[in-house]
Length: 448
Image (cartoon, rainbow, N blue to C red; front, side, top):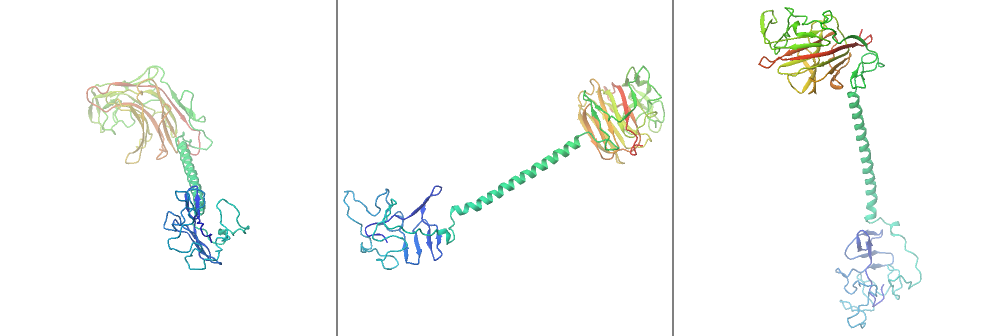
């Protein structure tokens, strides 16, 4: 119990993060602690009742204001400097014996404060009384108040779990990306050749051109020497033509040309010439028909058939109104489809197209490539055909690759210059072919 005439400052707890706050209130035999911003009232102990004052800023005891300095909190000095002694309480009680709120004996010291009632307890840390045994730690015998330090532990565990979850999620995403990149890289690579797994695929030469696999054998090669076409190798019309020596592709209603041997020229290279000249021909049934365009074509039908292989044609395709140059393959048994269009070009378009035709409904798989200079210089058109894949290149540029609906028939090669426009200014141009080379794969159970 405090000495008469000495007022005590209410105990405050401070935190660097939260600032000063009132001491927690301990109540009950087990010492329940409650954080409070108002009056702090001590709980019942085995020796009596302890009461702590309230701050002068609230509705507590106005006779014990918290001073702003470190002086005696119970001595308020007037402006004149004289010490009038302790201020009487508002309730008029005896200054010598403060009255407790619970009506107990105010003359007995309260063990809750642990001190001698006749000795003031200074705030400067002096020892006014015999040393007292330290009080046991509050946390050792009662549950903790929900203080900030108790909330940090579960937050830390939760934060650790979040960090671990984030790391695992990022790792999983990274593995997915790596897998997608590897699959895309594998799909974009030159296809594995048919046959054994040890067979290599096409090879990129130093000049950027695509070369056949090393174990493929050159089966046919020509650069059209001399000044005449070798007709033992090359035909100048379709084999189904009803009225040789001329013919047309009756399967395409858009075609306006009539092919004639006179439009095929050889002079150390092949030239297929389209001219806008009315020409007498026939229709599909052999009836007479006049065509607005005459042009040239050649095929390897008499001599070179292949089932799988590596085909390269070096050519210069003409650009012009209505012109439709093509390098393609169709079945040697004259069935249709399938059809492999290595390259087709129309008019003056900036693109060229590779197409695989298949199925009774003429389904198609296409690859379109920007090719604005196909009419300038020489360009190499490559077909790599295996039992399980078709891949087509324009120079070293991939135009089409597919593993679906691969033809399994023997086929032959065609080179032609068609026309699809009968208006003035159409059907005027020349398709030049520098060379044709065909490689076949080594004999295997798959290729025969």
